[in-house]
Every structure is written in C-alpha cells, then in structure tokens.
Amino acid sequence: MNARLASGIAAIYLFLSAGAPLADAKPITIERIVAKINEEIITLSELQDFVQEENKKIRGQFTGKELESRLREMELAALDLLIEKKLILQRAKDIDISVSDKELETAIQVVLDRNKIQVNQLGSFLAAEGRSIDSFRGQMRQSILIRKVEGREVSFRLSVSEQEIADFYQANIEKFRKGEARRIRQIFFPVPKKASRDEDEEQRAKARAAFKRVNRNGKNFALIAKKDSEGPASARGGDLGFIKKGEFFPEFEKIIFSMPVGKTGEVIRTRAGYHILFVESKRSGKITNLDLISGNIRKRIFREKSAKRRREWISELKRAAFLEVDFNPQVNSTGAKGSFEALFRDVREQISFKLVAVQLLKSSDVIGREKLFWTYGSSRRDERWESDMLKVDDKLFLGIDDIDGLKSIHREFINPDPATNLYVYEHNYLLPNSYLGKVSFADLIKEFSLSPRKKKIALVTDEDRVRLEFEVRVEKTRSIVADPKEIK
Image (cartoon, one colour):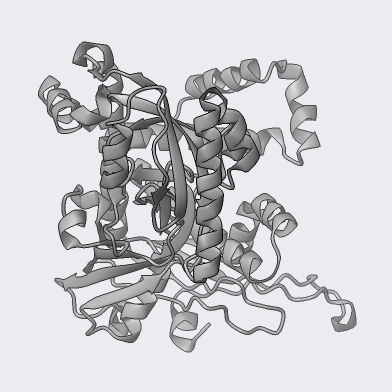
C-alpha cells in the first residue's frame, strides 16, 4: 500500500499479549483495508471470509490461467457486493429505516418452516455450519433491512402502465407469433474451410449417393440420415425440429418454405458443406392475444425497470459517497501484484463506454446465420439483463446501425463497476446459446486509464471468439484518477 493511502485509509491492528515477555509475544497481525466507504471500511479478511466457500468451489473446478481468471472475477464481484451492502445499510440510517423484533422473528419463522426445522433445533443446525444463533439473527436483520430500503428506494417508485404493456407488445409482436414453421430433417456432409478440391469432391459424392438412396427409399429418410449424415443431428435421424422464418440464410429459407410436405430437396452446397433437406411437417402461424400474455409482459417490464432503477440508484449512492478501492486480486505468494491495478476513481465523474461494433472472429460453420446477444452483470449466473439477438452479416459483423436499434441500456454503460462484464453468446439452430467469452469492464477502465485520450477501445473476449469496439466518452470530470488533494 502506497504512502498516500497509508496516511489516508490504511490501518494496522497489532494483537500482542499484554505484559508478556518479548520472546513469548504472539505474531503481529497486520489487517489490510481494501476499501473505504465514507467512514466505514472493508478489510481483506472480511472479503476473504465472504468468498471462502466460493473460493473452494472454484479451486476444485479449475486450474492454471482459467483458475486465476475465475478467482479474479469472483473476488472483484464479491468486493462490489460488499461495497453495495455498506452503502445500502448507510442509506437505511440516513432515512431512518430499521427492522423491528417482530419483523425479525416472523422472517426467521419463515426460514424455519421452509427448511422444516423446529426452533429448538436451530442452534445445532447452525453449529453444524459453523455459525451461531447471534450471527444468524444479525445476518437476517441485515437482509430484511436491505430489502426494505431497496423496496422504498426502487420498487415502490415504479409502476407499469397499460400503455407500456401495449407498446411492448406491438414493438415485439413477432416474438409472440407462433409463426409458420416447417419441421426439417437433413443429411449433412461438412466441408472444412481449407478443404482441397479432392476433399470437397469426396463429400459431394457422398451427398449424391445419399440422395439417390433417399429417392429409392423416400420413407426411410430418418434411417438414412442416422446412418449416413455427418452432421450433429445425425443421431436424431437428422431432425432439426421446427424452423421459423428468419432463422436460416434467405436462400435456405426460400427452399425450405417452397418445398411441399413429405418431399426431399436437391443436394445443396453452402459454406458449411453439402445438405439434403426433407420437410416432414408444417405448422401454421398465429399471434398470441395480448390478453393472454399481458401479465407476463407486465412482470418483464417491471423486472427490467427494477434492474435499471437499482443500477442507477447504486450508482447515485456511489457518486455521493467518499469511495476508495485499493485491491489487487490474485496477489501471489511472492507478493507480486496481479493484473488488475488499483483504481482510485473520482466517483463524481461520468465515463461511458458505448458499444459500436461487434465482430464474430470464428464462424460455427452451421447452416443458420449466427445471431449474437450479450448479457451484463457480475457473473454468468447473475445476469442483469439480456440484449435482443442480432444477426451478423456475411462478414460476421454487427455495425453501429444494427446496435443502435437496441435500447441504450443494452449498448451504453455509464460509470460501470469494474467487477461487471459483458458475456457474449451465439445463437444458432444447432448451437443455441453457445458461450463466446466475456469482456471485463475492469480491463476497459484500465485500458482507458493508460491512454485517457483514446476515443475508441477494442477488446477481444477471453475465448478469442468476438471482438468488441467501444466508443469512450468522459464528461464533467478532470481525470479518471482522483485528485490526490481530495484524498484525506
């Protein structure tokens, strides 16, 4: 910890045996402070206790660089959660909200009932987990208090009008359409991108031979597909399920939706290889009536509003607080710093990262055109929202025109927490929701702090599958680093 911080927020606690001879003195324990939130602190041991169980799980599942990455992501997310918790509890004092004993007892009884535990069994149950009744009651009281504060500051201030429901329905009408669909089976012979002419000809010959067998035994398409097809659906007799318009390349859809039911199409060549298609059945299209889904739409809009309002509220709390973070995840045994440098942000500034371009670096080489979507949050298990799916063009690219069609919260990130990431996924009929990696806002902030005059920053996901380009804008601020004079 540097001298400026040492004089500012660092604290050292010495635990020595009072009056004991020097030779018998207990070891000195130095407690390091990793964050200061107004007049409260978060210590390194507090953070370590908070992530102890998750740390064990991650270490049991990963090794090497993947282990380091997972631990780093988890520790940053955990620190951010602890900071949020401190800020919310401080807000509870400011607005004079508390939890009565009656509220606490009611909540505890709900937990007991849910877990089918009697009151007299609670002590032994907690002891088995290494907890005491007092600590359990304290944690319960804090949880209730946080929910009450969030309810007052977030949920109680929100509503969803009938007009909003109707507008959402009209704007997403195709999502509520059980459109015309064809159930397709295929026999597929893939051709690698760099295949030689002989390799290509070999696969084409296989496709022609399979096509002849299908024509001779039309009713056995599934059996022939299961035996001959080299595609991922061969085990299912080539069954791709029901295909709707907009899910395949236009030239593919033209064939699929023009073929009669029960008929087999000619051999088709695409960038992926050779295909033989069979239309097994069809389903007519129909739009679901608004009355039947208005309740679900209301819940979805309310969830989106709540998530957005909570993010804004937490950002407001952070901007109004004196907040300092001094934490380098993954300090190794030799004391070397990890890859994430300490960031002392002036929380009154506003820096935004606007997503302006997405490039899919590697194609999955399946017959449907890839769609991309991304989620934002602290972990893949705790997604805060999900973007709409966008189709990449023939060059596997999404430009500003495509991305600008999304809501601003799906493409523009103002004062993002370093612990958050963008998780990118691909959706294709044969590879639904395939994970393509993540981009860390900690890396974005660090990249900008090293070159604050940059107008654009491009990063590749940790899986090396997608390149994302962000436009950077800083407003009402002097620097991304707080003025040393302001740190007292």
